[in-house]
Image (cartoon, rainbow, N blue to C red; front, top):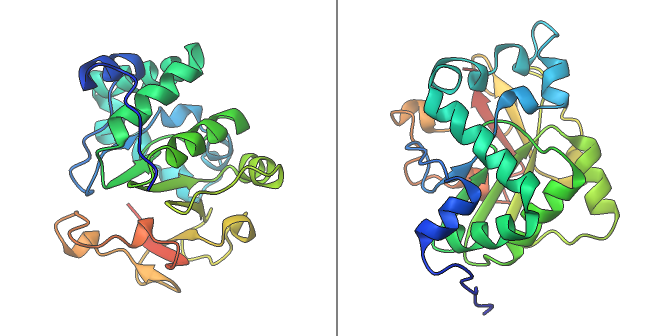
Length: 219
């Protein structure tokens, strides 16, 4: 089995480079997110009434009001922009001990370069299961069509634009998607979190490629 190489002397040193990870209490592992204001496709959808993004959870409440969250988001994106190599190395050090990891609990892919870097981190943390949530069809198509391999330990879930709508832009690219339902799922595996105190519990469907569609209750 591939072994990860630790680049930084301590986890604290690695965290200083990338600006920290999120301790999302709902999930079985940590996550990484940036400001939802940086979303490309999401920003366009946010202007269209009725879309999932028009009532985005990451643009209100805890995400929008807490200064510490805003600072963390800014620090993370700047860390990636300033030194992508150091960022990748630090992310490997911090993620390698996690069993599961989520990318973009807030925000979305910024470029093909960012997705390539994330997939490089995924490949170098083979014992961690990764889940990437995105609406950036063009970026995913660009990267995957140019021969960048999709490691076995990652699932890229393309996201639906409208609640209660089976159309998922880019689903053909990865074979895995995310739906949103307002009452009951119209297809896919229903997220169990609402019935489990808002937590994943022992469910790991979002990280599994064998689960084609996961449907989340709108919130």
